[in-house]
Image (cartoon, rainbow, N blue to C red; front, side, top):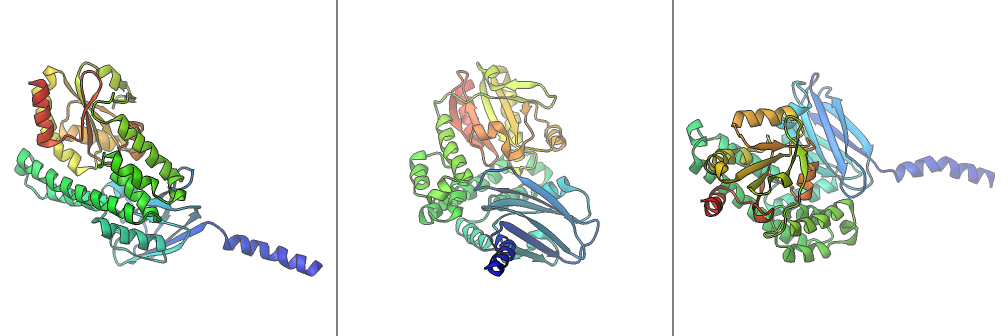
Length: 379
């Protein structure tokens, strides 16, 4: 009996290891060496807890990350090929976004993360199938829109008709993708990506009579997860920002650290504009917003721009370069921006037009639709 007890005790560490929540991600990107460095940020979106970050040097193209994970994580991985820092890699470099679980994953490519092939991840296989079903990631659509805008000449980029055409193409692609996301969620209620689909679709689909039953039909473990509760809250936030509702108020600091309150702008027609320095479609709209601001600022029109940046320098540089003279605020928390959460924002650009009485006039009015509404209200 004593030998059996000792044997069982010796097996305990092995059993614990077999049941552990450990994951590994091993990368092989060509034959890169120092000063190349990989930056890794991830968050378990099914269970409580904050985000985690890590980094690793690249030796003969190889790097490795290990960690603990109880559910499924969404992550951002950026490779600084020349060792020029995390922010440059994230905003202008080689960066990918993906989901993963408690798996042993291998990422390999001859030259970059953006061309990497994944093996050993069932979560990634499911994510890949999901993205193919809905027409690609929002990042790929945004990237295409950025290229579309950048492909124009300097004269074209200053032309409102060119900007309008770029914006219309971008919005049509997003609208098509949103419909496919809703259909995916209906057809795959037991997939974690049905929850991901609804979370993203909520940004553009405001008919809660269509969204709510799809959410209620999801597997209970996903509805009751951390992300599921966030989606439930956002469904409620959409109801708070529908046409005719009193716009939720908030206070946030401007570029000089001074607090600005939405409530203090009562009496004016306010465009609450969510944007970011890295968002091409956002900045492509700026020439039109500048024109509208010039036309109506003396007639009670104001723009309150909330940036979803996390880098103050990038934020300030974008304001200066685009020459946008209205009110700018941010808490520099990126997608965790408190005003963004309050308004249920998960993609930018996103705008809310608010009347002098503090009530919402319309959502996501842009380009000509915004111009017509402003002319109607202020002329």
